[in-house]
Length: 80
Image (cartoon, rainbow, N blue to C red; front, side, top):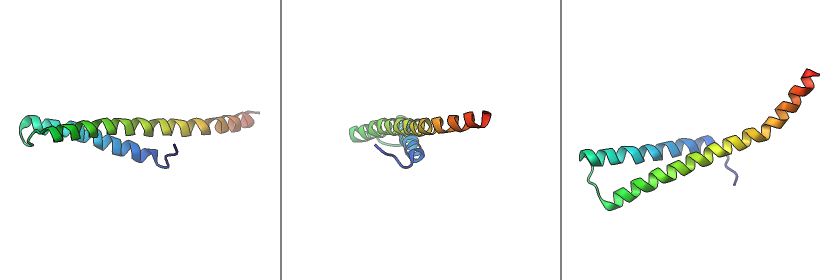
């Protein structure tokens, strides 16, 4: 799977996890009525945010790993 903007995945994942944190607190305090549908929505947002964040992070690591051998080869050439 090719992801063109892994940073965006991490940001979207962060906001989904944040929604998964804030909404249950608002339900606990009584500002938002707690329903089964809202609970499932919060669970889905939190879980999908975590998955998107992990995919974005792994994509960034994979991209950097592909570039690393080129950088090492260039550095060896400079050292002599």
